[in-house]
Amino acid sequence: DAGVTQSPTHLIKTRGQQVTLRCSPKSGHDTVSWYQQALGQGPQFIFQYYEEEERQRGNFPDRFSGHQFPNYSSELNVNALLLGDSALYLCASSLAGRLYTGELFFGEGSRLTVL
Amino acid sequence: AQKITQTQPGMFVQEKEAVTLDCTYDTSDPSYGLFWYKQPSSGEMIFLIYQGSYDQQNATEGRYSLNFQKARKSANLVISASQLGDSAMYFCAMREGSGAGSYQLTFGKGTKLSVIP
Image (cartoon, rainbow over the protein chains, first blue to last red):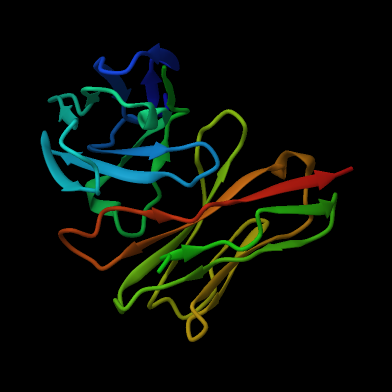
């Protein structure tokens, strides 16, 4: 049973560029959340997708956008990259019916470096 | 104010000994959930244990137990019989409320645990 998979694992971009990160949730999961983890910090919630719609958003600018596909996979897009966007981006999947008490399953993340 | 505070940046424990990782939280919502995650160097966050605000008993999962003191707003993680593989970052997290708008987890800054042989 495959867990959460993310791609790419590492990437380097320059300021002003755009990036797309991809996530396939754990089999059977229908909800995908994205988190940003800066070096030495805990993860910060970016947004959550369910039924192909953004259900909740954290305190991130509109440069951060996402999408969920009918097969529940998801993309995170970041436009006009800033140096401060350098971080580990974590995707987490869960079952909508177990969101409050059930755990999130995380991928290993995509490490983005902005130069 | 920080919603989740982990005051121990780093901890050392001898193999086979027990260790307690501290976590305090701040919320005015009567309904909330508390989580602990482990993050090895690979980057993946691994769920360890969950405690709901209305749960009467402290949560336990194998070698992990959560010392939940509601009045003090603390949710400390206790790891018994430490193993070398327990060396990792540990994060405390909270979900506030129930229903729409309460899907996010707020994480603390983490504690780095090192298990000494």
